[in-house]
Length: 483
Image 1 (spheres, rainbow, N blue to C red):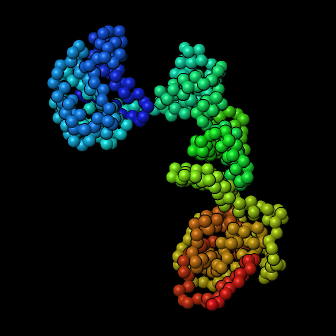
Image 2: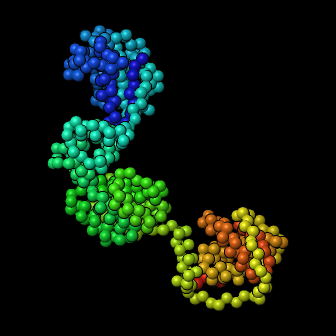
Image 3: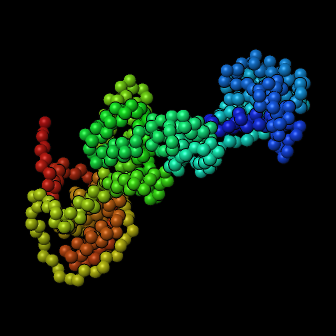
């Protein structure tokens, strides 16, 4: 059985293939591990053993390359037990090359082993995969990378902070080799202790203060402050693509913190700043901001004027992104009206019919129900008074959704008719128990009778209706121009 190694980039597939080649050929192996001391192991480590052949399929993917292998497999190994072929990026082979390789995989000589490595196993024919033993390589966790880096730093007498180790682990994205490369670069270009700031400077990551300022400027709709910070970053020679990517990750972390109240790679002061920003913006607005920034990143890839594209994109977010969701703004407005902080313009004294003095009953909350047919009954004469009462009491959202509706009294039920239908947001508002209770209480106070509330949606009256527009109760000046 041949061996198939699969995983994303930089996870050590080729290194593992070389270790496997030594393990199956080492005469002194112990528990499957090569001794690395015998002549065969030393020859493999020094790259002078001809019995182990490494081929890059990205540049050697023709039928002729595979045919040369088919001719070589007939020769016995020189000093090793097995002749091993390591084919890296095997998915790059052409269709003809796969067909040529298949015959050898089906009936290989006893002294030949193939080790195939790839990052895209879906591109391999099923006939190839079925003849191999598969091993999937996964990304190394950030905790394991930090542990390994600590060992390396201890053995090499490297002084490094805990925050710097965590940052290297995040930047390596699960690849141990990349994390070691970043550490080596930091040691070459730094003196003394390796810090988080030093790593960001070497890698080209903008300072967290700049990222935080730009994000806060978009939340506060302060375009001038955002442009000043962007200019500072450009003056420091930072790449705008890296800056945008860091802003997207920072906004994502704000969303994570708002949902979980947890973040790992930030200091206490940075988390306090993230909390401060998250308190100024809703989750819906954060999602909209992430979407806009991701779209800006795609647009910048194809633009020759990246600075202009970046600055205009940030200004656009300063204008478009709302700090609060629509429901939050409506609730805030209703509270201000109730507290008397806001008065409705052109409000007139509401004339109501004589009230019947009766003790209000506790309304029974009904489940939200919408029907498309109306039952026969009398229209409720107090309905305009109910709508005006909702307006004066500060229930603006309920009031606006009930404009141009009619109410019909059918036994103990008050059917509210929506001839133009209900929007999804209108259903959400009117289905709230507190809003149903408010309508029921006002009806009870005007007519002295408790009604169940039911909503009727659709074209109630199929007959031709009057084309006059009912603007009663709307405090918006409208000019109607007839052509």
